[in-house]
Image (tube, rainbow, N blue to C red; front, side, top):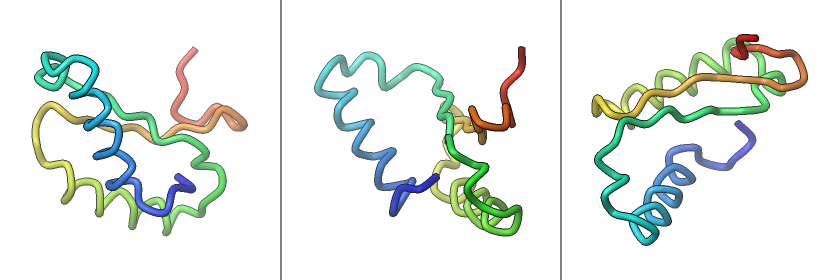
Length: 75
């Protein structure tokens, strides 16, 4: 969550994935956005709205997690 642009970072990862194995681009994705304990709920909601707009395609889902607080992590 501390990246300057989560959307830009995601596109960098997609580019690396395409270089590694283009077939993987067609699989469903789950993006874990970590360190969410670093932001307040209002900021997280703003990021959530940005991501809904940026990633409308069906094969990209995302979750917010924090390893410090176990937010979003099921045991």
